[in-house]
Length: 330
Image (cartoon, rainbow, N blue to C red):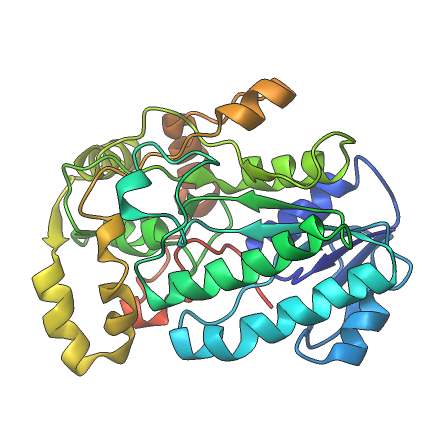
């Protein structure tokens, strides 16, 4: 059996679809799990409750941790270490392999162009320090020989089906679809990689069902040669048939807004990812699996066809965004 912990988000949902190519014995675990395929087993659980996690993992060969929590340092600091302890202990006790879907917040700002699996671990944000801590918990048990696991890392993301958990969807796709100006954080002249969520889910399933990939960090497949902010906006506007109007939200504006909007303070510490080139390298995965990531323009076209061809979604305020690089749900 293969089990997804945090199955309710876009990655968990797409992952459940992809795992069906490998097994018909899939358990979906979240607070309110929903069946993706007829044969899915549903297991409601709060991942902060140790006994529930133990029961959720029992009988599993492979466990995928794709859970995500509200985009708040206080929430992450309180919740993530507890969840990771529970999941690691359950996997060790029940002899299950662990695939941890991670982000890149722990990387040193000087290693963002390009980001490889060898990037220096030196988080510059409080949320990045939490991500470093929980990833290290996995690595420590692997190095002790107690756990078979891998860490699959993804940059910021975009994809069809996303509503309120992608910065690109919130600030560019939705705004342009409503005839509003797009917003771009940081510098619109810097390159910024985004991973296409169907690619991320497919690759995660491939890793979980391969034999020679364990006890390593893997970057999930992301198209090379990323667009600049300006090019992202122009490309999306062109496919929508609208004017590429936009405004740049720089660090000063974010800092000022954070005085009145608490959520903007969460963004403030992450602005270093938007004021320089942010280029994700996934050549290790691409070479191992002979995988070609979805080109950016193709991804943009697919999203517009699925999300915006008939219905234009209402723009959502920035303070409703639940995460930039964690396309997941608890």
